[in-house]
Length: 135
Image 1: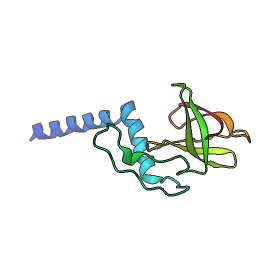
Image 2: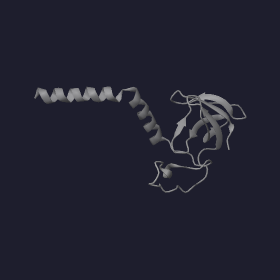
Image 3: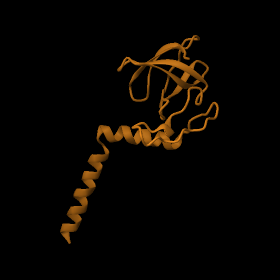
Image 4: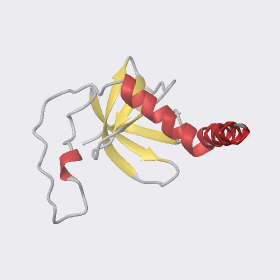
């Protein structure tokens, strides 16, 4: 009788420790946000069917101008890469940027200049530079 109880307590402690690791916390936060919030479409598009000959899942691709309110030129400071990405912007406050392969990043407090330039930190602590409207 004591043995199953001990085994269940060990399992419980393992699950608690596993759920509290840094990696799992980030995943849980993203999953919660993904389930509670929806992307805001700007215009419709018909997804491409996936081509099994490629490693890319083309059904995830979306053209610029599909999500958000504007398309911005955005640089990820960590990688140094610059992208044209759709964004939800309201009164000079960037709330979210959308990636062309699907997914998005939220900004808790990101106010930019009138010309849509500035630098902000996303919800995961990554720094992004906004360089005005993109192509």
